[in-house]
Amino acid sequence: MNNATEVFQPLQADDPPVVAGYRLAARLGAGGMGRVYLSHTQGGRPVAIKVVRPELADAPAFRRRFRREVEAARRVRGAYTAELIDADADGVPPWLATLYVPGPSLAEAVARRGPLPVPAVLWLMAGVAEALQAIHGAGIVHRDLKPSNVLLAADGPRVIDFGISLASDATSHTATGFAVGTPQFMAPEQATAGEVTAATDVFALGQTAAFAALGEPLYGDGSAVSVLYRIVHSEPDLSGLPEQLRPLIARCLAADPQERATPAEVVEWCRQRLGRDADAGAGPAVWREVMGPEVVVPSPVPDPTPVHTLPLVARPQPVWPDERRARRRRTALITAAAVTAGALLLTGLAWTVKEAADRSRDRDAATSSPLGSTASGRSSASPSAATPASRPGGRTPRASRPSSTAPNPPRAVPYPLQWLDEKTSLSIKEPVGREDRKGDIRFVCTETRCALESDTSVITMLYGKPGASFDSCRVALTGVKDRRLPLAAAAAGSEICVKHPSGDIALLVIQVKSTAMPKIGFMTVDMTVWRAAQELSDPTSR
Image (cartoon, rainbow, N blue to C red; front, top):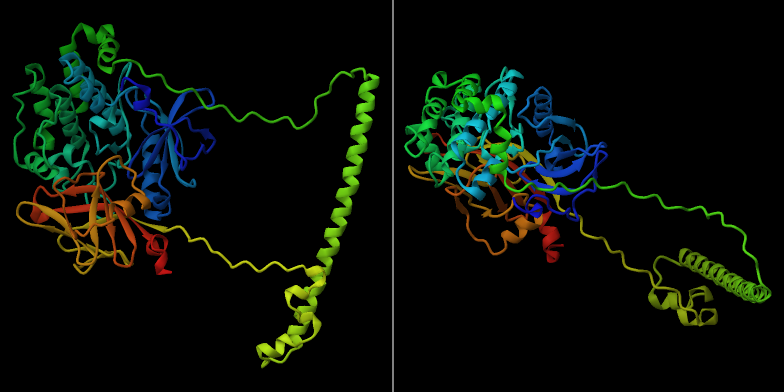
């Protein structure tokens, strides 16, 4: 985070220069839902523009979910949230704009400098709890509070990303009946697909604060499966935390949601421990220490400068005799060149008319000849059917060019929010979701581990930056023969590529993976299938 190049990436060839009037200055990141860019308001204030991936935008179910996100975010107003300032859920593609927070995420800050000091953790918990008050006050449960969704600004934390938030007066599950969130920071009730309430966010606040104080996840490292198992079945080990923080974090992490602290209680508890500093406004000094060097935000991209097309009016200049003679010579040369060009043009037009007449006679001769004429009969026909060499002047007509049709790009078909468990499966061909085990992709679990497997298709996982495309999947699947993919290393956001024998290629982006209890394990994925992929990648198949 010490260098602006770590935050602001240059725009790529496939990035749009403008989104709904916002000129893009840099790319901030990419994920399973889309890309995020830096732009500016007309007054020059930095904003973050989130643009939805085209294949997701084409899915009505996803648009409805995105519209809920926008409507929910509009209701949130708080000092410690990144305010939504503009959006269009019906745009092509859909997008939204929030105020840009010039600071690292909590995850980035901890990775750079290690655990935060106790006063910084207290300021962090108070600020995030106040943000949760604003979010819950608008009737929303965040559901995905974690260190990467907490940005550290110069004056305190900002809670961002309501991408999977839902109104708390609606059902606690999505339309297909499953819970949502990031497995590493789920509360026990999320991991077991139970009721999700505002107390669920408080559990995530406790985990986030513990991460800030320890410099590592409270429930340890390892696969998501083992972490979720410990969250559901084990009491948290708080012995590594500073003693001053243990009582409050323990209340946040109570197994019973009814026993957890409320956001208001968290704010009051932290203010009491901060004492005079809370009233003296000492928070900004703490944040400057944690944030490190300030990152300079790129300037707004200027509008294109208009090009003058009218001649400028100049003051008349005196013309000397030598210059007049030179001008006369240039005028004579230009006139001669114009006459020559005119003659050539007339000649060319004459030849064009002549060739058109020849072609017309050829068509007339072909039309009048018997359908059963042989090749020898056609060669002895009237002069209009003469060979090219017998044309006047020996001119040979241009041969007709063979038609060349460029291969169509692969057609991306989105299938958001697909469910996988021990009783269902997915097919690459439509219909995709199946209530049986006869599809191309199945979710299987033993007593200790879970995996994806297929009888028809090869499977591989992508590692690296998110934002997979058809080309990256095609390259990753080259030479792959595995039809089983263990899920121990997979988590929310992981990308999996699948190739069907037909040549169709599918991308699965994990939204939720719940495998802590394999007997009731499940996965939800957003799936994109590129149709006609074989025709594009294998010319011999045409």
